[in-house]
Length: 336
Image (cartoon, rainbow, N blue to C red; front, side, top):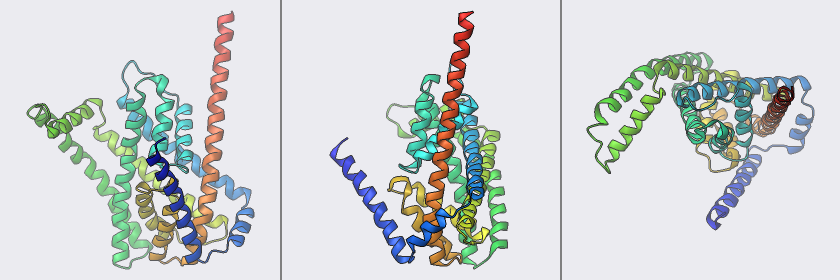
């Protein structure tokens, strides 16, 4: 590791600690009370959170598998749904320690190494998949922004969110057709060496050939991203209720798009500190008291990290158990 990377790593950790300390100070969080609340969380609440996390991972897994089907070559093998789930859950858990984009891409790239085209399918597929999360969050952020501008409430946000998602689904088809037209009509004419536009368009042409620009696939990815967003909102509400806090559902839903955007560009490990401060600020803007938001943000981090790692460990054990059983069966068949 170079000195520069080491410095950046230490700086990001220090910044995360400083942001958490700032949150505790500004929010006047009673850490003893928060710890007592965490210790008193019921097993029913924990079980609900774990099950919701399973659904969250499943949505991401299905998105990636849909993209992988378009990316892989005929000579590449297909990871099983169980293996894909395990890789996604591992990437999600590691995303609590490093940027989630890096964590997920690394986990899937390493996991598909033996299946062929690991970099294209693992890293490229993950970036394409998460791009639809960004698209969905972007439309929802507009709905949240308009709601705040007009000082609306839950009904306004819900209507605007539904309209935003309908527009996102409608915009996918025409947008992809424009990209396909550009790739088909301009790539050949700008194919001169060193032409940056030509390079970009040839890249789009390759995307078209891979099947990633299929409108049906894009709409499926958008719908899965919407479902994933809904599950994330419910998980956040569940962590709040687990420690005895009542945060209105619509306020949580309206705040999360801004949290997701901040987390995507965060410099700190796992967006630690950035995620919490953005959550508290966004919730406060929509009417949640600062003290309540700060208390929830810290407890949410602990509960979510615990559920992520629990699901990842269980999924990894299941994958390895399946491989051991399959190897034993092969050995038994060869011994006959």
